[in-house]
Amino acid sequence: MTDLKVGQGVLTGKVEGIENRLNSLEGNQKYQVWALIVLLSGAIVKTFFLSSNP
Image 1 (tube, rainbow, N blue to C red):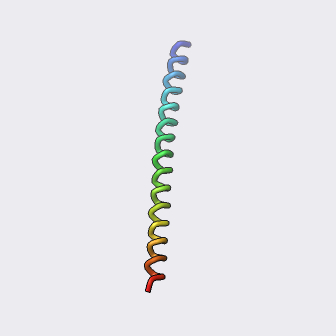
Image 2: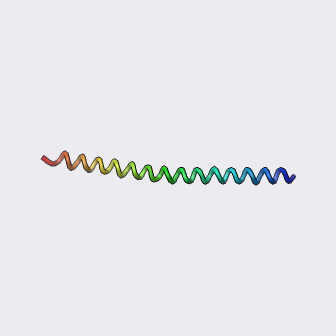
């Protein structure tokens, strides 16, 4: 019976570790998406201003 409890504790720890890794990946991905939005909007604005000037 104690082996089962120890196994359950180890499994719970592994699941929590996986969740922490997923949360950190989601955070990194969020910043990458924001950086991409900023870069694309900057390129669009730059193209608009360069094409409208004679």
